Length: 330
Image (cartoon, rainbow, N blue to C red; front, side, top):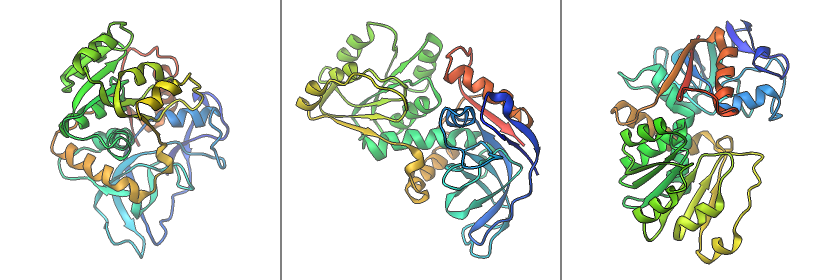
């Protein structure tokens, strides 16, 4: 099979596109012909060596896939050949990456794709959608009628968090990094959308939620805890899930006198069973046309190096003039 892989860490140019052996599914695995994968920042960190997580070479990037089951192991019960499926949570814990034509995936990690939902859409929703769901509902326990601030709402995770929060009846404040992203957040249903660079944003949030906000979801790599704590109400909740090297100051005094709670999480710590409620909700909302995901680029898998370069321009350098997901097709 064709695959994108690396034999050493380094810049995007270390990604090769060539032949690797076809996988053989085990008793509890499905063999999936991959139709679409996406690019996530974590893969660029691992590929570069910034995150030392390569167990062996050749190493295959990719956390998500969508495709068709072509064969099943003897113990598989939920799927059969011909089923359309998607998965996230690959490329970690001994599970191979997804930048391949064929993937052997444990049955427990697979989810059905309903008719009418494209491979490209569901794969673009997968990791970022599960992340948004976990932040809002598994960690923050966001409830209807509560007010949530989503900082970084113009990004892939943030834009889905805006939509999910609205779908569950919350009041949404979206903070994004430029005028185009602010406008996109308004289109997605944010009750208040602001540029987080604007010094007037804090006062606008105070006016919108005079008693403070219930939940703050922070997608950025360098959270401003002083701002977050000052805007949260009594017993508010904060969620962070980015910024491995971040060491921002933390206002311990104002934090504890408000009885606040801070949650962190990393998706790779969740089991397949723990992720399933998020996957089911995402699939349902997407099939109903209630979740929108912006796909900025669709490229052939052979251009995986270019895709990683584009992702780094956006994630690390902030220099990209586009926003959305990058999808690759084997």
